[in-house]
Structures are given as C-alpha cells and as structure tokens.
Length: 615
Image 1 (spheres, rainbow, N blue to C red):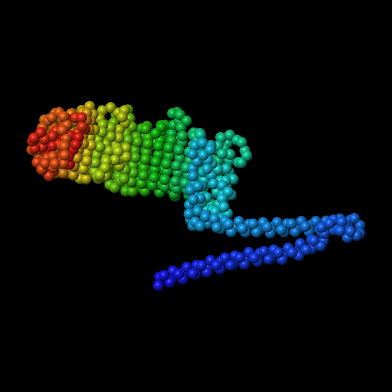
Image 2 (cartoon, rainbow, N blue to C red; image 1 turned 30 degrees about the vertical axis):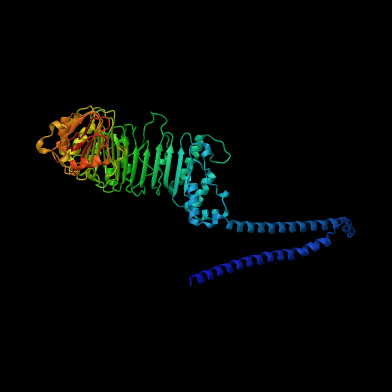
C-alpha cells in the first residue's frame, strides 16, 4: 500500500515537472513567433524603401532638393523610433531574464526572517579601531529582493552608528525606520576614523563632531537606546536640557585626556521627568545628581563611575537614600567613587527594602560602603554582592558590615567562605570553589591599608550573621600579623553544623597554635560532618597537630607517628589493609608534598598527612 502511494506521488511530481517544461517551451516558441511576425513586415518594407544600392534609390527621386531632404528626415525619425522600440524591447526582455535568474538565486530560498536577521547583523556591526576597519551596509549594492525586504522591515533601519555614516546614509536609515524607536551610537573620541559628514567635503574633526551632534539633537525625540562617548567636558547644553521621551537605555562615557579632568557633574540629564521611560543608565566619568535620578522611577540598571568627583554644591549626596527609596525597581546597581561622599544623611531606623535587587557592586571608602549597607535591606536571593573598600585616610571603618541581619540576609545562604588579609569572599557552589574575583559575595579592602582589615569584618560576620546552616567549606589565608580571629572562629563553627572542611593556607602557623592552645575542652565544636583540615605551606609541631585533631574531630582518640620522609602507600592491597585497620571513615589532615608527613609506622592511624591523601 505504501509502495503504491509513493509510486503515485512520484508519478504526479513527474507530470507536474513535464507540464511546467511544456508551458515554458510554448512560451518560448510563442515569443519567437511573435518577434518574427512583428518584424518581418518591417524588414520587408525597409528592403523595398531602401534598396541595396544607393543608385537605385537616387533614381527614384523626383522633385526639388528640399522635398528630398524632408523625405530623408522623415525616414531618419522613423528609424530612430524603430531603434528606440527595439532597444526598449530588448531591455525589457533582458530585465525579465534577470528577474527570473534572481528568483532562482540561493538567497531567495531562505525565509524572509533569516534575510532580515543577516541584514541586521551586518548593519549593526560596530567598526573597530583603524580607518580600514569601517564596515557599513550599502543597500544599493544588494540584490533587488533583499532591498525590497529591507524596505518592508523598518526595524532593520533602527540602528545607527553616526561615527561611520554620512549624512545621506543616516538620513536613509531614519527615513526607512518609519518612526520606530532608534538605537544610536556616537563615539566622539580620539583615534576614531573621521568619516566626512557630507560627501566630498573636507573639514576638521571638530566640525565633523559638531555636524553629527546637531543631527543627533534632531533624533532625540525618537531615540530609545543611546551609546555616547565623548573626549572632553564640552557637552552641548541641549544634551542636558532636551527631552527624550522614548529613551530607555543610555551609555554615556566621558574619556579623560589626563589625570586632571574631573568627573562631570550634571544637575539635570536629558530633561528628566517623572514620566521618563529610562530603565538602564550607565555613566562613566559623569555624575548625575541623586535628585535627578529619583525622577527615573522605572530605572532597573544603574552603573555610575564618579571616582574623581570635585566637591561642589551640585555634588551633594544628601538625597542618595531618596533615590533608592524612589527607584524601587532597581535590579543591578554599581557605584564607583574614590572620594568621600558629601553630606550623607543619618541611616534610617528601618532599612530601605530593595526586593528586586539582584546585584550590588560598591567601590568606595569603607565608611561610605558601610553607610549604604546599613541603609539598604537586601533580598536573600541575590545573585552577587561585591564591596571593594578603597584607601581611607581616616582608617578603615571597623563596623563595615551592618549589625542588623535584615540588611544582609544573603550572607546566611553562602556555602563557602574565603578569608584573606584584605578580602572575604563567599560562594554558593558546593562542588567547585570559584576564584575570589568571581565569587558571588566579596568584601575587599585596598592592599595599601595597614593591618588586617578583614579581621574586624569577619568578627561582625561571626557575631551577627550566624547561624549559617548551609556553610560547608572555609578557606583562611594567614599572615604574619597576629590577629584575634581564633577567638571567634570556634564559636563560629558551633553555629555552622554543616561545615565539612577547613583549609588554612600560609607559612604562618600562629593562628593554628593559638587555636590549639586556647581551645577550651568543654566548648569544642566537633561538627558532626567535619571530615578534613587542609594545611598548606605550613610546619606545625606534633602537639599542636594532636590538639587540633582532638578539637575538630568527633572521636578524641588519635595515635600518630612522625617521620621525616614521605612514604606513600605502595599499592591497592596496602591501601585496603589500612582502611580496614582505620575504619570506614578516614579523616585527613593534608599538606603539600615537601612538608612533614604522618603515616602508619606500624600503628593504627586516624590521620594521614601526606601528598597522597586517602579518602
């Protein structure tokens, strides 16, 4: 049955193809007959009127010379008209052939949406540095079908790079966009190629920039995305005062020529109003007043780098909390300011709730970062919290983390901590530990600061953010600086019942010795799931090691042997025999290979300390 159906379908396809070929042949033969019939009479008439020899033609002439010239003129006009008709017919025939060939081109076998996407990718390609790298789409050089599709899709014309377009090209883009929201980019910076705004004109780069800025000013009412880079502080007045009602995304970068240029301070920005649709604002080298930002109630992304801001009346930070209170839809916030915030208000009694905030990044003085952390109630399910405290002449704020756990409930959800002299990092992945610079939680301090600033922050972390029931891994980097970290570490472990592993790294064993000496017998943590202590690049006396083992592990009975050479377990049989003697669970203290090793030495071993860690 299936075979007969397939055979029938094949037969139908063959018949359709034969019918199409027959129709094409009939059309071709009919065209030849039409041409032969149409031109045969004309050819015969011309042979009669204009014989082969000029003498025969001259013999038929009669009358005056003027009449003969008029006759020749009429024949000339007839021939010109005939030539025009022939050329027009040939042109139309060739156009028909070209159209049929274009319809059979591979590009026409693609769906229209794919062609639109290819055109969009090509037209949106941003040029790189260098004049030879300019790439713009010239639609006049594309095929007719593609041009038709492009003109029928206004969205293909909504992305303009004014740096590489001439005025004529930019006008074509705007005209074909048909009032759809535009995405405009303009890089008026040194090193960018200077494409003439008007073809054939030779003017300075300053004039070119002014011409493009004037054109950009006219587009403001219809722009939704604006990517603007400027070289100096000469921002046109209209950029501050003019309104852009459809604007949703702004990336504004002010490049510095040297270290002398300060952050540009703006009291207004693109005619800010309460009905603004702005959702994403990225500013670098530019500071917009907090009062102005408060008008952008739909703002969800705010990135502002005003690290070199001058002290002035417009640079007051008294309304910074009003901005957070008004812009309650913020999801991503990044603030960079290396100078002290000015005229900060008192922290609110009840922190400002930021329920939608997913990412917060602060790079500022520790006192300013502490103020913001105390004033905001961050959600528990944040994706990232990064705090970098820059150098502070008055010293590091010792109460950087807010004592109110409502501000940072996110910390209680961490599964791991990395503590270094100048950084506390937290992560949530159980299988692998991300590098500190990519950790979801990071509290960092400038390396120029003296002392151990992470100690005070870790103390607050231990005292105010416990319990941390999901914490399983802790990594501590020790230094030559003696700290009081050990006093809080044991209490911290008692509130973290899920801790599985502690890793202590560094060539200073002071922390371990203090832990071993000051651990009271009655308050030993003995976490039930604790299985491993990893010590790297560290030499520890045997009594300290035994004390740590008895404190951290549930079973207080340990017998260890101390030798100088590493003697690893040679084969699987010895490994299996060792497991049988030790028991089902082997707890390990491991170190790098060139330090002291502890192994069986003909005794039951509970701790193996060598490069060949058994698990």
